[in-house]
Image (cartoon, rainbow, N blue to C red; front, side, top):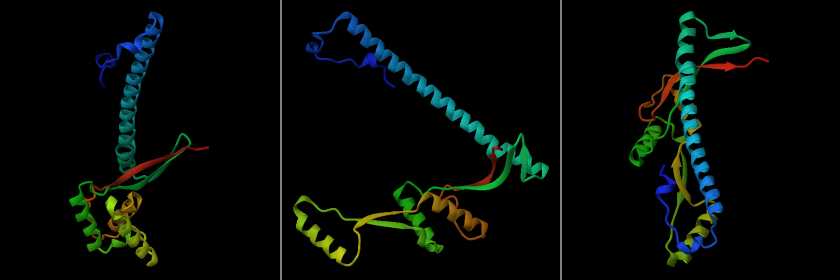
Length: 188
């Protein structure tokens, strides 16, 4: 973040009615806002670190210990702790890789999970052509917006089901992670 004191540029006439007290007060407010931003950044960093520590317990330490002992569910201090499978995966961001991933889903018989929108853009001089095409498509019951994607939750479900059923899916392509998580439910 840049320091506000290094970026001061102003029109001298803007300060005609400025008193020393008002200037001091304004400077104090700006300094305090800058300090608050620094505090927020620090707290966000600490929160991120805490989440990483929590995840190490939930995704690694607790599941490993429970498996070592031979448990898949236990109660501790009124909390029920159970192990379950988790799946994560994302569509590639790179357009070429995304197309390859969509083709992979089609190749393995999962094209029903792919959503599509089609958008047609017309220049300012093509208003009549746009209205005519829109009317023609509307008459056919079509909607003219284009986008192709797979919903994140749908992708996770698809990955989970295909892995559980020993069916083909390219886990690396979808940056997929599978594992066990300890879910802790607080008792009443």
